[in-house]
Length: 328
Image 1 (tube, rainbow, N blue to C red):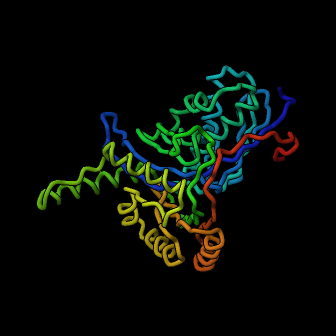
Image 2 (image 1 turned 90 degrees about the vertical axis):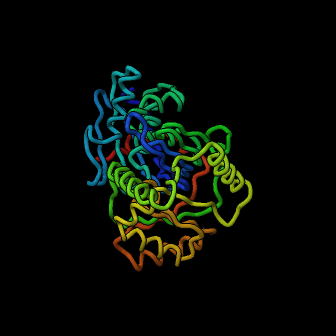
Image 3 (image 1 turned 60 degrees about the horizontal axis):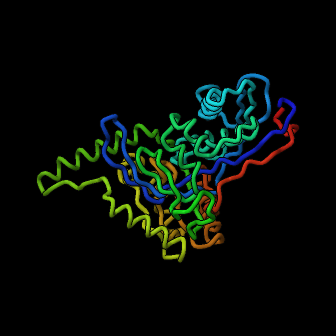
């Protein structure tokens, strides 16, 4: 096996087209409801045969090294679960910004086990691979399902919006301009901020009427899902974008309001923050209009990260590569 093939796979970013956050449960976890689209902004991973242990290298200094990285944790967890004696060298080309709400770390973890599944000849299903590393993060599961997915529970329940099987080649008819203003948002801090904001709002609402119920009903979830199923079949002026984090995080990060305004003035049909931030995306009807908007933003704000990305139609495939492509 040490002299065998090496493998490569892309790890896509995701954006949340809808993100509703419920209250905490008895274990202190928030339940969510989300419509998630994977996009063509990707990290790239390569795995090579190694006699023992997991060796990890990355081209970005902002990424944790060793066992602090989810890629290493996922590789070692799969190694133990499968009873594999040999190891692997893992190389990561990082393009998805860290702490942006784009799911880069979870996507990298999913991608590495998909590649190692081939390298080690395990033949495991995507469901089994997902279950093996599920304890590492609640949103890892979404990277094992369709690129346009419904996510529920603590984030661990993911299924295709289309109601069909994985890689069913459906997508929303929009092009994304993704903007990262260089300011990471820690996820735990974002949830605490949202909880405090809601508590304050409830206290104020006791003077004017009953507080709003934040968890979605079954009927509300069905309406949102059916709306996106219609968008798949017939392009509309744009989905109804919604993110429960947006108001809270924008209040703490005023630069996000600036990003929102610039995307809107650039012609975006809809603008929303992804996840708990700090990346913001705009929806554009054509690739040309998206590219023009991105070029304008790069000129105005060269310190920001700006990407044009298409929605993925299928899950990235693992492919064989020459062993000689390993970094020196």
